[in-house]
Amino acid sequence: MNTLSADWSKPQRQAPSALVILLFKAVVSLLKVLWPLLLVFILNKKSNSSDKYEYIILGVSILSVLRSVIEYYNFRFSISNDNLIITSGLFTKKTVTLPLHKIQAVHSEQTWVHRLFNVSRISFDSAGSEKMEVKIEALDKLRTGLMKELILSGKSITVIAENEKQIVKEETLITLAPNDLLKLGLSSNHLEAFFLIAAFVYSTLNNAGVSDKEFEGGAKWVYENFGQSSLSLFLFMTMVVLIISIGFSVIRILLTYFDFIISRSAVGFRIKSGFLNKKEKFIPFLKIQFISWKANWIRRRIGLSLLQFHATGTEQMQRKMLVKVPVTREQFISLLADSYHPLLMASAHEAIKIHTAYISRRVFIAGLLPSVLLFPFLYPYFQFSSFFVLLLVGFVWLSAFLFQKKFRLWVDKEALQIKKGVWGRHELILKWNNIQSVQVEQSIYQRKHLLASLHLNTAGGIIDIPFIELHKAREIQNYALYKIETDSSGWH
Image (cartoon, rainbow, N blue to C red; front, side, top):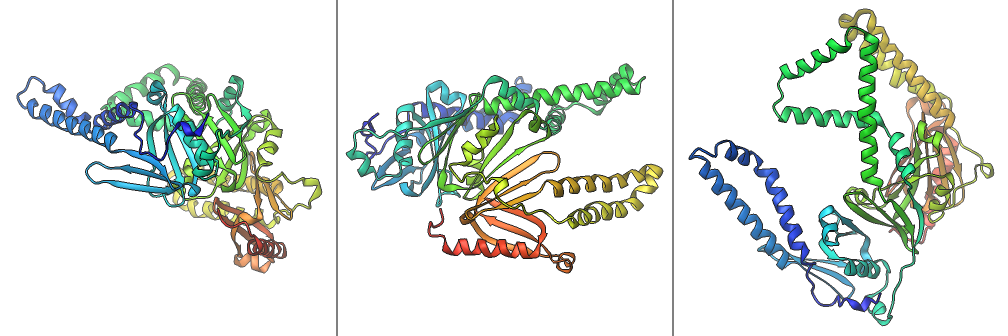
């Protein structure tokens, strides 16, 4: 499609459906704020006092509609002198100017309302806009594609105008089949899902005015039917928790990863997914600081991992780019990592391990010390049962032992790779030139035994390497500082 089909130099409005979407958002916002007044109005509709609530609701509604209409007609956007210019405002005119070369990513989203009108919401990330939301609420499919092509091509608008056609070729890397979605849902953290839905149900029942007697009535019914046998009660509660948790997990995965596609172009990854709300995120290669992938115990057994691109930017920008990519085959990890840096071959590099002293220190600090401090407070209330707090020592020992046993650090001239985990697996690969600073930390115990912990600070997060030999920590620090000083690529 020809980029000249849209004359970006002229100020343009959003798609006409943007007005409908803005009105819909205004109605939803009103309902969230005015539902107590609506409830009072409905309950007291036969009373004369209900007239004032009717006037309040009517007045606020009219003002909200007028605001949406004015915002729609005042909104303009254009591209001039390689700058994206957005003008908006209600009574005060506001103009935002974003240089095209500073726009780091273009994201699009389609809620069910947007899909109804075949439009998309577009938002822009740039180094100078992290504290403001720069977006176009509704843009038709044609202009959405053209704007993404123009901005992500990295070329001047005048250069693009000289060409009749600009096509950004993309290669599809990963798609998810229905059985992949089912595997993801069944292998999710069901305990987390259960607590989320339990908190939601409890909050909803409280807001609905369910009394303590009704709670007690439900508990009494459970006891009368299953309380005669402890085993029956345990099995019943376990079954309820499993059904609720698994169902919630599967639904959440379906809503998040339905129609998932990740593709690769010459400048970055494009990720599309969503059931009711279609989201499209673009992650430029230059913004990726490091790549990590995780798999819990169950997912390791069925060959599933969740891969994440850790991008540069503020917390708000990182949240926008946060996508956990489901990896259904081991070779897909290498395929995705190659655009950043090829994975290191473990056989070709000597592995750096955590010192065994890590286990005893973790047991003392996180296991034995808390148990000794808690025991005197628990014993008066629980008597002999308070000794169970000592099980914490065994749990911390097992966790520290597994972590120390699994930890591996491989170092190459251009990158380092870490493998770690307790019950599952967590790996990452980091290029040296993405490190901003290195901190060597030593406790009193570590200084005495010539050990140290490393903290590698990147624009995408901090990477910790605990309890390695001091001379190896200094070697890593010195080499990282050397790569930082000699790196000529500049910060992105």
